[in-house]
Length: 471
Ligand SMILES: [Fe+2]
Image 1 (cartoon, rainbow, N blue to C red):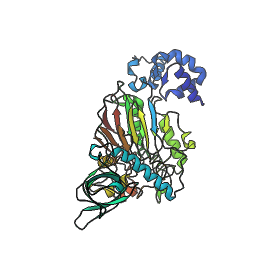
Image 2 (image 1 turned 90 degrees about the horizontal axis):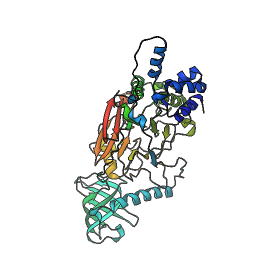
Image 3 (image 1 turned 120 degrees about the vertical axis):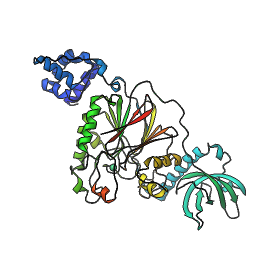
Image 4 (image 1 turned 120 degrees about the horizontal axis):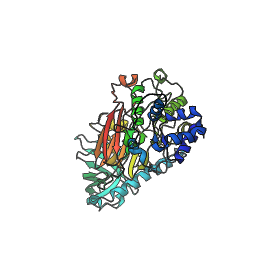
């Protein structure tokens, strides 16, 4: 335990919280040995800011400044305890051989879990296994593959379950992608082993109807893609954001948690010639810089992070949390989870995924573009999978369990990755594509991609509302 931590823990024993700027003052005055005098002097305030001390010292120095000190100025987020529970956090030590058996297990898990959601739908109550279908009207559930189009534009695909496979012909306008698990309703012709599908049923999420609002006026700020170390990191706007959090005012008083959805640093060697766009060339120093920034935050804010494709862990999903040697650089109020992860804050279930699959969806779902991240996140919820199409631009580790299946359903779905910002709500689920802290890079300019950095989504657990603040 270093001096700083010892001081903080001593103060906490007396139920005193200080702003980070107060710590150097205490250390200058003698550190732990000065604490009893410090507590006598300022302890009654409970929450002590740098300006409390500055004002008090001003008085000592003869400045006739009338200072009104009131415990009313404490941010509401300071008043309550954290309520943070991990629901799904893939094991960091998981390994797979990459053999065909691993892939089979992964797909079987995806199929079984999503089909059990589909079986609960009234429209699929009569669903039968593929091998047990008889001529006539049928309902069945399977995984889609080999999608193609007929010359008249009808969709043809193979549908497979654990008992067999079948060809489906569908002329409706619903979109389906390879590897999705869906229900099919239609007319079966045993002789041709084909279903003339009249409808396709997606697993989808159920409407959220329960009242999840809590009594305490607190919430979480949500950001992504900080990319510390890049020379396009928007340092001035980031510092304004940190200053706002520290102020505990103008909306910051409710912020009890800060969620960062991956790409914490810019990394090294992520793309060709990246070094030309780096301000910090050592990835460890990039993390140290971020750790220093986060140390400035009030101690009552818990920071929850997952990695992204620029971070130091393997690129294949699910990505493990950052390694211990990185975690050690940060204060104990920073949590490190895997990508994706699910956790709850005061009962609100957050599903946080960096968002590599947005690169697949933007190409494969008709009508999508990077300004429509909300629609793509809706697609994920309907398919009950964060990365509906296997592989393509998303490397995957074939584990026993498919951690990208969306089950249970969240209250808040958070992604990042594409450096735009969007907020929407689908069936009562908040959809936040969190903003970045990096301006347009040369590569993005070349690709004609315009990021929308420096925005923060703030969810208030008391009102169940999301507001957006731009820095
Ligand atoms: Fe990023």
